[in-house]
Image (cartoon, rainbow, N blue to C red; front, top):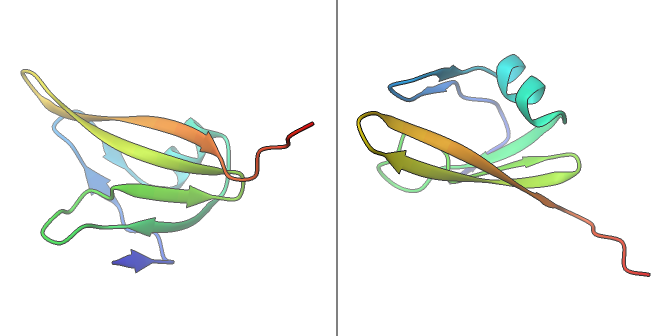
Length: 75
């Protein structure tokens, strides 16, 4: 399900608000996608990036962000 309004989400390590996410990524939020049964998004779209959310599990449940440019310029 794709939603166009921010939903706060948490891991064992951090809580992500709109402000903290935009500060971390350095771009403005546009939409997020949740897969069925998950309370952490799989993808977040910003003005310039698609951010892939990867789950990391060792001692704690945490996530990492991978930014991919939305509109790469080919020369």
